[in-house]
Length: 64
Image 1 (spheres, helix red, strand yellow):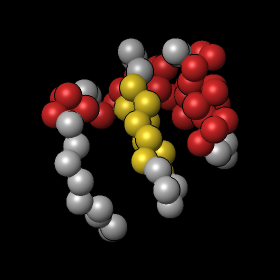
Image 2 (cartoon, rainbow, N blue to C red):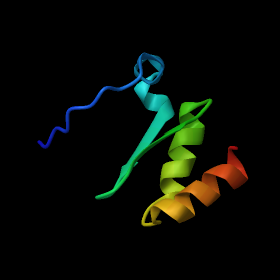
Image 3 (spheres, rainbow, N blue to C red):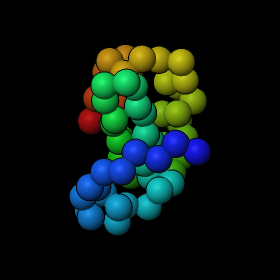
Image 4 (cartoon, rainbow, N blue to C red):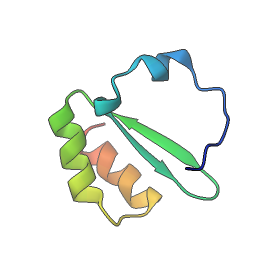
């Protein structure tokens, strides 16, 4: 396991993990938050293999 220490806002920690999708690359760490677990799962299936920009666009189009 690789762990990167950070100060995560309490508001983000309070959100149920099943409502969050996390993406990381060498220069960014992104967390998308959804209303339902089904929305999160749909997002994960639809964006598998996409880069960050494509995922951001998909999220804004379908969930934003």
